[in-house]
Image (cartoon, rainbow, N blue to C red; front, side, top):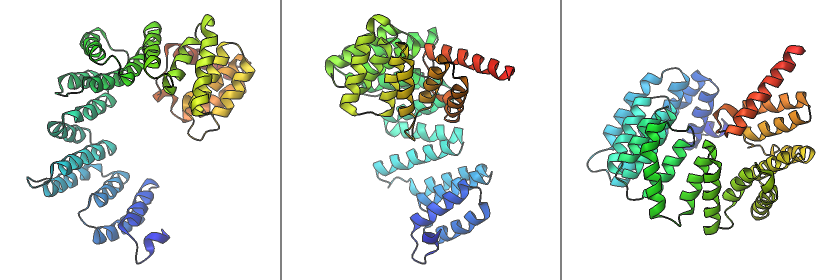
Length: 348
């Protein structure tokens, strides 16, 4: 606020203040600062974004669409450079999505896709977030893109959220198989396929893909992490699982996600105390994933420390565990832990 009240305040400072006040529902105060911003920097994208966010916070989202239309009509003309056209449409699509203008967001993504075929990837992701997985897949498959590997990677990413039905599988699998046949040394493609198989519970196919990645890139940390997680599901492969995750940590350092996997490997070996210690270290990271707290809760459950498990689950849910992709094993464990905590609560 002090920076914005300075007579020499910049549009950036005013924009920051407007958006801060809007987030905290100080509407009247934000409107005053917005007035200054509009005088100082009228007709700019940054000003429009600040106004749109304030309108949404004021429950006036319906007023945003006409502002976007007016901005685009003024700035998107035949004389506008192609790169600038793409940027304007992409910004409009993302802002529309952010403020809840679903049809407008889709429309802008589709217009952008006409200029840039690869923008169909963004459109597909948006449709999938809207719960329209079939539309997202069909959009990707129909897109006239030259990079089949990138198309397949986006397909795998979309389908990691939910296992497709038979109809969708019949459309998707040939595209993925073709892409990998054309790009046998594409490590990111194999990693994407392996991750999708892993989340769908196709363990052996996931392991096969991850091993293929490591033949191409032996120090691929993400793949070492994923392979360790999978291998640790089988007692006969505990040693290799531990070797994989230790190598990943040696390469990357004690990163929270790697520590979480190490904890999972230890927990599956019934080294519960060691697992708890590692999980605790993982959740010290301010950006700790909800799943790290969930795994810590499972470890506490194994020790029958249900009060500690409950605290960890509260933190996991605060971090939106329900939005995280979970394996079949994790979903089953979550159901069991939830029942145990409910039973404990009923007895108290």
